[in-house]
Image 1 (cartoon, rainbow, N blue to C red):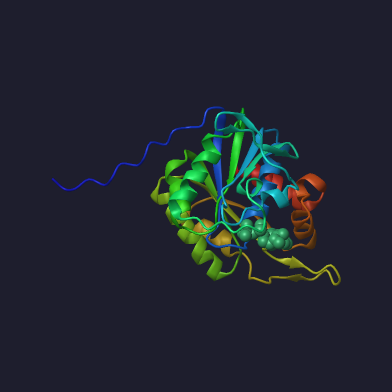
Image 2 (cartoon, protein in one colour):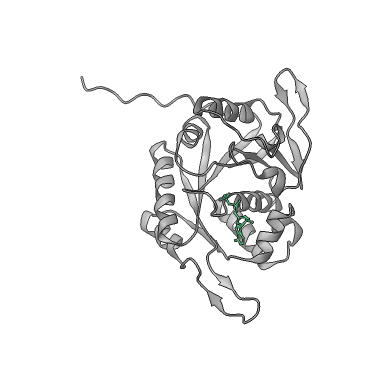
Length: 260
Ligand code: ADP
């Protein structure tokens, strides 16, 4: 008899959470966290109850992006209460360690931290939990993809070939563990010069849409490289919350609607 492939581990659901959606990228710095947070706020603006789990253990960014400080309170036993920001329930390793403290953890510790963040946090009733994944396709990512009952994954990429090659690895990883791809977002898609009004495709343009078409997954939308997105993001007042009427906020809400 031919050897059988190992069975996938049991993907136990999390009581109270309707769907868990991963936001992933092949590499860092492409705007995955900015997309996660604005996607979460977009889902909320579309009427859903939303939480966000920062699975980027080595580089947590939710405390800064959502301007949250302080430590989560213990509820009972090992269960802790998530923090809240702009209506979102939020959990991040950044609430448990100082910003300056490097996380020098090996794979198994990361995996147990992620499991705790998911299962030992009092998330309550949520329609959607958005998981901001760590960049790349290593141990933590694979474990998340394998052990967490993900309803789907949103892939964030910039338009240039190199980023797309990495994004493709991410896509392949989710497919390998049978997680549906909800679609691809092209971030830093183009730049409109505020002085001359001219449009510049700094990292090229349209690569993510082409990739989505090529592999047959939805293209969720393009977000330009924009000062206001950067300043609101880094200032802890994400654009979908602070400038709901801006064209970018509409784009994010549309991305949210198409993704979920
Ligand atoms: P990642 O999670 O992929 O590492 P971040 O979301 O932290 O990326 O974004 C990296 C940097 O790029 C941050 O300073 C963020 O504010 C900025 N950024 C992300 N998306 C955009 C955008 N569309 N326009 C301008 N700046 C952006």
